[in-house]
Image 1 (cartoon, rainbow, N blue to C red):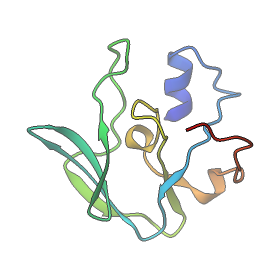
Image 2: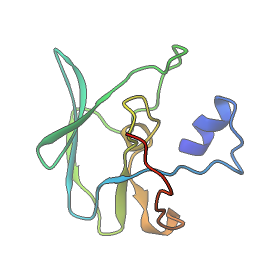
Image 3: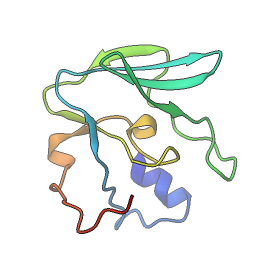
Length: 111
């Protein structure tokens, strides 16, 4: 789903890679709920980030689950970006371990 969305928004599906920190791993409970204050992603009973309905251009964003909770399978990981507007697991869901190409360490961190 992530590659298809990236292609629709101008990315190259054959070259689209996402580098994201992992917010949840095997066995962690993930929930997505809509409240009066917005839509929220919750990991192990902690609010992680809001979930947007549209991107900056007003295009609808994919929604892998809503008003539900589930535990990640033993080979699933939920990537979440550092920026509140990141296109990440809030929209395309968990990824399988075999889809992860490796881990990355930042060369520089700006704060």
